[in-house]
Image 1 (cartoon, rainbow, N blue to C red):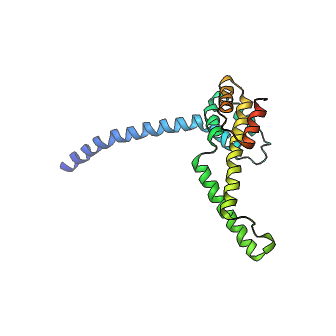
Image 2: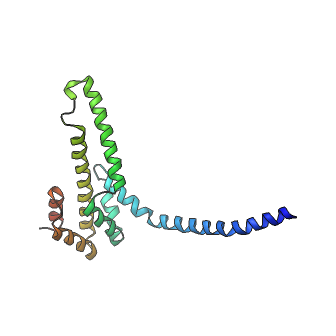
Length: 171
């Protein structure tokens, strides 16, 4: 009989934890299913090569739902995780080029690994920023335009990013 009491007491403690976990899990899944199409559209757009399969339009259809993410990307570029992943991929690509160059001297990299990674990483960040600007310009709601104009007035955009911003704002 003592064993049955112990099992019952354990179950009484365990049961509320199970309910909490199931409620939490269903809530989390509900949120991710709600946001998932926007995140997928944004990722597809930011990572597309030619962007000829309607990636921009897929993002623009979400209008103000994605303006916050686009604004943040316009100002700061991709997430730290994306930047880290790209840095690692560029470092690996450079090492492969250097290994190939060791056997084929005419194909040896002409810049250091550090310079190579910096150059292409800066291009990657600028690409994200320009695409965010382009998407905000396509959305063109008051909220999107406010973000574009605010970034323009901050004078933080440089080089090609600034040119994209001016083009979208018709300045």
